[in-house]
Length: 219
Image (cartoon, rainbow, N blue to C red):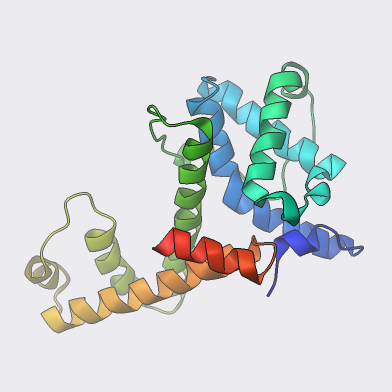
């Protein structure tokens, strides 16, 4: 209902700015990881190229020409990125430009192995990963702001850990009952799902694409 894609074509500069910010927030990490993993660039070069790609795209309003009838926005963005990297990066990565609309915290980005995936599949996976990362960050902010830091901590320890503890161990660790652990996890998962869908809706071009993507993303 508040599509960043639609905002790209708005005559209102402030609305376009909000759309640009929403898209960069979701896509900058997949772009950075894609440059590292598939184009085999060093950490510093990948940082420069990521910043330069988005600065150029926003300055020249490349995203405004996206046609939803020809495919998903992320496919269009990746095509723009590949073209940029193949033809422009030697020059654009060294050009001084204004920073993207959102701060890019490269130090907080962990790298996923590209493996034997195709470039397309790798970018798709990193796009999905980025959506969930943004949603988890917003879940953390929301729960902390509402004085429910323990709720997020339980969720983080159980759902985000590689080797999660059992419910009884969590209950002892946080000094709560097993039933409260169950309630905290259920509430956090519901909220996370809502935030993922909210973020997905913002970057979908229309309701049909949103529903298709939601089914694929959440299985």
